[in-house]
Image 1 (spheres, rainbow, N blue to C red):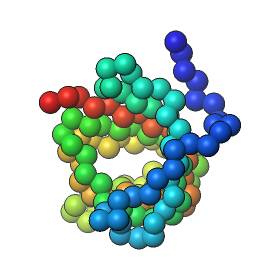
Image 2 (tube, one colour; image 1 turned 120 degrees about the vertical axis):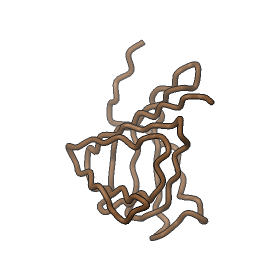
Image 3 (cartoon, rainbow, N blue to C red; image 1 turned 30 degrees about the vertical axis):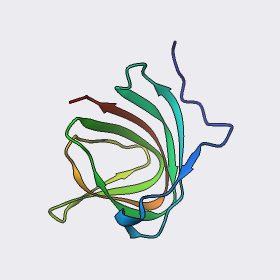
Length: 118
């Protein structure tokens, strides 16, 4: 079955970054899971977040592609550099990435996460 990524009409799942990973603020995050494969390898949907920054650690087998619909994010690497991704742009967070995810302007994005077991 084909799944369209229409604008959500209901509420998504609300959460906040883990307190031990927070670097700035305590942003409210909302996720609308629109598709999850039966084998658990892929999930996709829409994600929105307020301004803030927190540390992220991706296991080697977890990869995320996202496309920013509105807002601005910065992905900070461990070497002190960063990559900005603005509305109309996409990026991949590769497996094994460690750094920080910063929402500079409130963001809404499409996401696809692929997790390879093992």
